[in-house]
Image 1: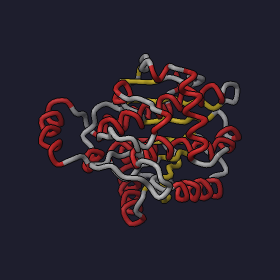
Image 2: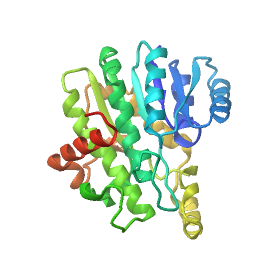
Image 3: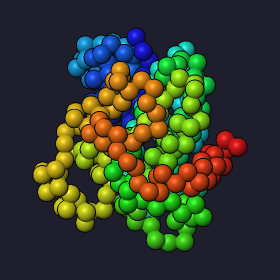
Image 4: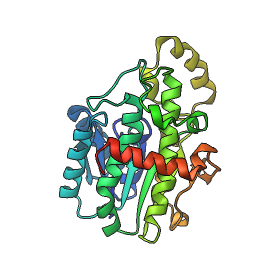
Length: 279
């Protein structure tokens, strides 16, 4: 039985991936922000999967203190950590900063992944072969990375601009981390789960929601199908040793030009480490 941690596990693709991984016989730690909701989702996954090896953990990824508390909790509870699925993510309808003084979308979607993964790296290495799965998005192709103004303090913030930047950060982190993990037995890959009919866009502006409705009806896939993309990267035997890739529809795809800029990725890594106080 492998131990797999899934963040953002109380809805959408995270919930469905938890069901799929539990059905395969793995121990699944489901991370959510609200204790009552997470516990209810754990019970649902146990019922749907037929497995009792499913348990809750708490984290608000808008808070670095909460991410650190989660890491401590996982290290205490999990002597092995075979797979870490970085899936927690959101969009915000308006500009705002976290308690740590960072624009919220970037803080949750990128720095949350970055901090948790780094805090758990030693345990992952001890558990090798192990995997890190990073849920990114095709939105990274439209993202920019202004290291001089990551929190948009000079203006220009938009819902999709902030989201694209955060998802670009995911892919850049994946590539930088893969280099650092070479030879350790730990792999890391990013994925676009497809355009999923989930509640991630519940915080989008009211004007955008009517525009999303026809897109949802025509093009969006189910959370179950999106969850399968996570399960594939977490468990597929043919991916043993594969690292630093970006996947769409379970196949490697060339990431954006900026995502492949190694100098920019290294600068982002250094800046991210400063922002989460890992330096």
